[in-house]
Image (tube, rainbow, N blue to C red):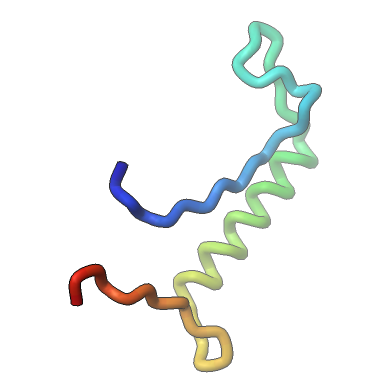
Length: 61
């Protein structure tokens, strides 16, 4: 709706039965997802000259 880019970081697997009455999440998968998200947000918050953040041109500019 907003036209903003998005990034989906799934932290699950098919057998977890998401949103089912017996939904569950395994600790190793949760831990791996947290490490992935932490590293991603750290990289996004600390761009370097070697790895700058991409900048899209403004629409109508």
